[in-house]
Length: 556
Ligand SMILES: Cc1cc2nc3c(=O)[nH]c(=O)nc-3n(C[C@H](O)[C@H](O)[C@H](O)COP(=O)(O)OP(=O)(O)OC[C@H]3O[C@@H](n4cnc5c(N)ncnc54)[C@H](O)[C@@H]3O)c2cc1C
Image (cartoon, rainbow, N blue to C red; front, side, top):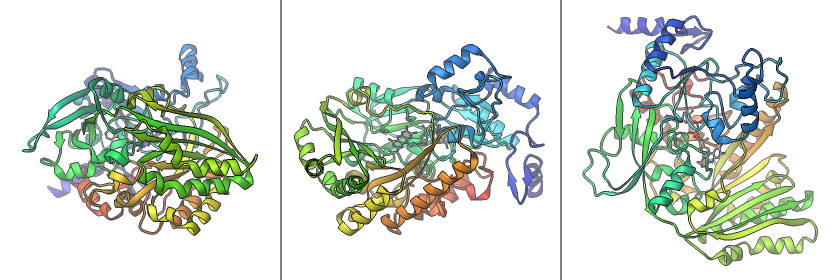
């Protein structure tokens, strides 16, 4: 019995070097054209030969109308999400190959990291057919929804893609009880994995409630965001996304549809709340709803600094983080070497003055600095609802650039220590990369026990998620990109020293080259996650890069 199972396994996998890898396009074990045609039949024609989005601009894929459409939509995140080969971060679309949107027609367009075939699933049966095919043929499989991943988890050279963006539906239930549970009912919304958050916010607005979601309009409502933990500008008030999810409906690697909640498949439910991708394919997530938020005070502005004023400005911002937490103010800071953009928000408040009062040390610094600091495009106001904030432009940004990033979660104590603030602002101010401060910790994020869900336990003592990021132009060479990658890894490791040895990184916005990634991404939860991974996906069908179980190979 055991030996025939092993024979079956080795009949459909390829040995490359010392590792046993799932089959990729080009490998001898890659399924035959007949097998793919059969899958296409089962999917009623929804298997596509996926290509980079710029492919129609180049021979042999040239199509003038499709090329014009690609050029016109190139930076639109929603359009990118709909393309089987489209990614918001093009570092994970092309890899170190190229398929230029502006290049001449006869310039070669390389496949890069875009999966070779993709099943564009429209219902649970499609997902089951795709998963069964992947398992039976042991193919390298990648799941992609809204396509925002920063660590290359949704793309892979020669892979078989399963694209979930057409799984739609947002359904409210004011008396929801998780299946098989004997608990009091509560308000909830079930979000299909192909939904974007802007549509969830719109539906919640119409239904008169609040749903905790990403601070970007285009992030997937029940895909990578929730599986990785899901932070929000609302998190200090309501917790992380994973603190708000009541139930998942998924298809596991054996092709079965399962419900995971506190009362059934509870180990899987635990893992899906922060374990990242690779445990199952999410069909939907059911979130708690909260009463409607009527007012959100916001203050936004830019600050132009010079070499001498940038570091003191950054230090002042860092020193204010505990006060923001105390006053219930959340927001984001995007600090490059010469220009910083900030937005601060206070939920359920129409008191812009109190936000401005907390910002007084910044305004004082600007006043005292003469011409060394200049405030640009100030905007303040009170948004009447969460949807109005987002539909007014917050959380909408052009995509389609290549970004690499690293991060650490920071405890409050760092920002209460003048010496640490001084050293850290000095370091970040001269790092040459962008620093992003996400004020998404503290408050309710710090309340649950460290292991109540699978996210890195250091979330429970994190005040701020600090990201460092850099970009490269599409014309850069591989060695130029490697310089940027190494720089981000070096800066991230220094950031880790400032955060302290027991703090980790948020897996959805982290350095893909993080050494000791299992500990940094999941801390003491990793071993339990690996055990659950081996129960629900024993042969590693749902592999992805730097996902739980990746050390056994197959997710390059
Ligand atoms: C512009 C932008 C804004 C962002 N803002 C935030 C933010 O406010 N808060 C925050 O926490 N993060 C944010 N992120 C990070 C974001 O959470 C991650 O990039 C996340 O992976 C995105 O999920 P996705 O489904 O959109 O992406 P995808 O690339 O489609 O998916 C990422 C991975 O998630 C898994 N996955 C996706 N769908 C499924 C599914 N149906 N079943 C099983 N696995 C699945 C797969 O492993 C996949 O590889 C942002 C990213 C970007 C690019």
